Length: 231
Image 1 (cartoon, rainbow, N blue to C red):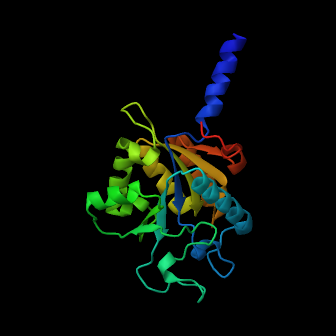
Image 2 (image 1 turned 135 degrees about the vertical axis):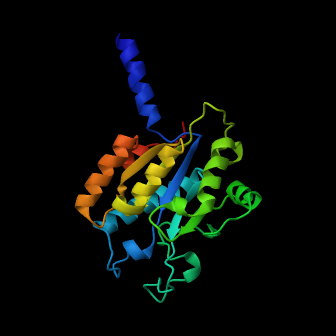
Image 3 (image 1 turned 90 degrees about the vertical axis):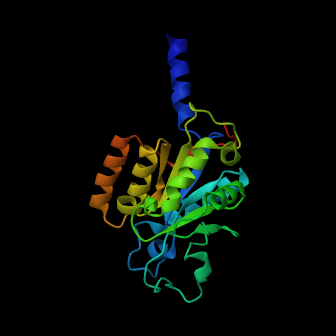
């Protein structure tokens, strides 16, 4: 019985770790929500930004594919600071990676999407709504990563479940929509609770409850990247 309990505990612990079938999913980590100059700044943004930087660096160092979204308003008044290059889509320095590929919010040829996913660059979809799945290419991206060993660096099968490590802002809006969308499409979701941020705390509590009930697993960044080993 003791051996069985220890084995079950080990399985549970390993299920909450990054593995060879993991991707990182960055939701709207932009100046619009994380800059001191923003009117929509989330609570505890300084701590969230530190953890976002750790996650981004971890992904780069361990060759983990970064996917995600950026919010591009229909109006062009998106730059808060004049020193920000609009070509970066207002991404925070902590999460911006050179040669990031931004996928426009219009249908793109699937071969181009596949080529982007096979590159070493992060791939972020542009959107004008809370849900990243508003961009028609997001579903294409999810289907490709579910069926391709070029993204996860490990041969997948019908039994393989891709793990999406989700972080970003805002918890009660875009993060919630991303998590629920990924879960409904058959991915496992690890939500990094100290690398997300809310605008409305009450709505965020309800969103967290909804995401957990749908199957998301919450954990801290230290729990996630406690070791350099990819299991």
